[in-house]
Image (cartoon, rainbow, N blue to C red; front, side, top):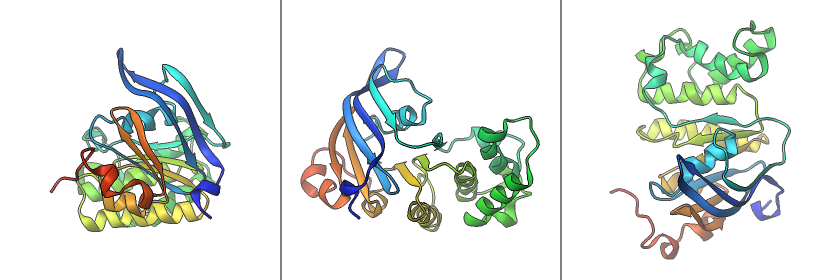
Length: 236
């Protein structure tokens, strides 16, 4: 089924948002099709992270509207940084935090919670690392732990901000394969990315420029030489 034939999981209309009085997104109207992979593409400062934050509910829009057509709150995996690695957490404890949305941080995990966590660890190939400290892991292993935390939330909408940045090819492919599997199982997956090849493997694409929607639709129609020329060129 074409993404144009699918119902929207998220719709934004005339959206504006920013930080401390600085507008980042302006009059942005777009749709995220359900049960598909969507790539947010654009130069640095184009508004990709801001749009993800608005959809996730961690950034309040200053104008316009966001409509969610789903019953679960979004699962959000922000950009990988050093903060997570600095925490004295094991891989399992990190993934268990994904259950806090349902259980709260102070309630003991149920048997089902533990099953969900185990499944997320297995899915990302990090079950053997469950007892290791995050700080001991490679960048790719740590990122897979954070993605597993998002998967453990069991949301029908998974948002990821640059999940492959700084990772080697094998790590990027592992994460990409999991995201594709999730979409085939009915999860709407949205990732901001600078990787044009990853974006082209998505089913839908939003191309942003200076906080505006430059184009949206299937990657083959959006990520053309004409649309990219003078707008954004990949490094290298």
